[in-house]
Length: 552
Image: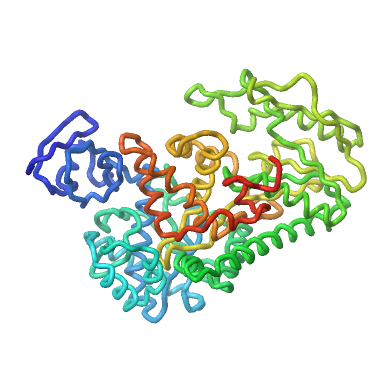
């Protein structure tokens, strides 16, 4: 069959020759083609240069959509790698973690780039953008790809390929430069109209527009505490020899990963112990520890582990669940769709919480509320009775913990705020980072399946709303924390793969969530699996895969 039929969202349908490039039909969307980052073909995101090989329904992926924003950022990183070849000829440029709406880069040698070099790099990138060069993709044989990356000193990429067994490897190409294809890129450099570089720390930042902000790059807002946690963890990964996925896979292949798991868990435990010690040093004034973090950051297990660390120091922590202070379904504010918004602070009975906290601070006994999620209301009979006595300290865990509006009546000097997040330091290779949100999404998906009976498609469908709530209710307050705890375990993605792979494969092409399922499958393909029985019973990871020694 030489002709295929393509359907567009506006109802238009055309016939075209088998193998037609998507870029030649995108004008049928009836929108500015420069606003299109990629194309969805039967709910799978592909570059606009892809060949159409079957009857398909297609729709555009707009540059300013969440998916388009990530494509834009990946393309910026690709162009930076091209430009860096001439600026840092004897050095490698490594992409690191995100910092606000930026990616942090360092040099492989450890040298600090000069401000003039950063400026030259920015100018070189702008020159590539002005040339409006085509970005294409093609396939290399496995042997050819490995040789290419080794000869270009991209050893981390060559190491990553050892996990793959495909006879052909997909690569992106621009101006003779090739890098491994991770996800779709823009089809030409001229679409990268907004970005800037600035020196920062021991490297520099690649800055770009925030989601929903179009081409506007907002003023830089520093996050020194998070940057410190990231940097410390990155240095630790370098010291133990697991900076990139290929190095983790090598440990799995050599059957030394169990030792690494023990090292990673012990390192994380020491970080929690450090936080407990900081609390203990201020115990004469502190009465309340507030723990907050985004979805699936491991807040619940972190709170339980902090309790144990405090008990080791002779304290008697009392854990209080903020979930029990929900007002109830009838009194919960509605979102723009008319549905209950359980993530806004107004969904909690904040005045009652503060009334009880004040009573506890006065040394009085209170009866904690109990919220019944089945009925959507608070039980009439109260829960356990508590009183703050010598050696006691309250621990409250919930998404609004860092917001002082939650505990408005409590003096700041008596509060200690802990921000929890999964800040993985692993990269796929030197040019391709792992978004921390992907780590949390896989955790959430596995937990939803294990304990809530929710299919992967259901988790993927709700995730954008979850992220929007985080940007509104959590991230603005993360810099107000007294301590930040990294709950990521760099081996965990190899464990989560064991559970997530079949869940993602169950998402069929007819679902709109299929595109995200395909993206995540291609991501976890890079990880060698680790059997879940290797995970300790007290690990944060057990909160998501089950088998925890803690009771939730």
